[in-house]
Image (cartoon, rainbow, N blue to C red; front, side, top):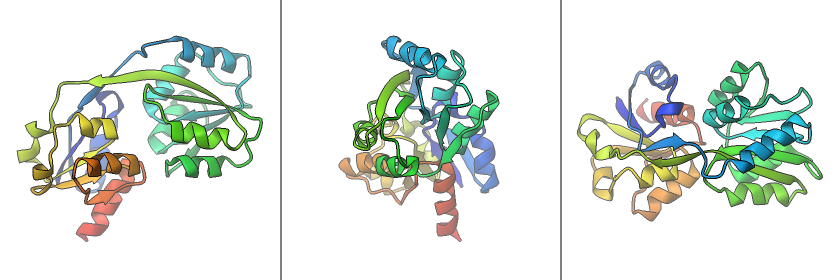
Length: 231
């Protein structure tokens, strides 16, 4: 199958190879692009705390967040690093560090995975998109959260409609990338639409589109679900 994917160009390394391993062709259409955060101070503060060994756990939700932070500071060996998905973990490894990999990204799942975090200071390097569910779940377990937007996302001016006639399916990689895509309910009648995770699926449903599949937050899971459906 030929599958459109709304992956950020800056985070698309290895996507074509991944899709080919499942027998598909990826068509990357970025509806967003990355830019520096509006306010650099939170990221600089997190970097300072890491350099002073005041962070116990460091969470990366994307490979781009890894780059933006680790280009500025390198955590010591005592810091527990947790990556969302294997691609994020691989990017951490490129900086000579090791991280735990959480495959399923949801706020409750994350808090349960971390275990006893009471009194721990947790740094979160993320896109400039608030995630109150995640921070709230961690705070409720007694953690101190230091959030830092490592980059912001802005519209790239691309519409998914540009490639719809040439693809068999589309995978939306975030709620925002879906909202900026121009994809409508009438388009969903012609091709399969897939949400990378629950939050993306919720955004699609609010627009009257019910995704054919909902992944666990990774492209690998979306492709695996598609493979099981086709076979």
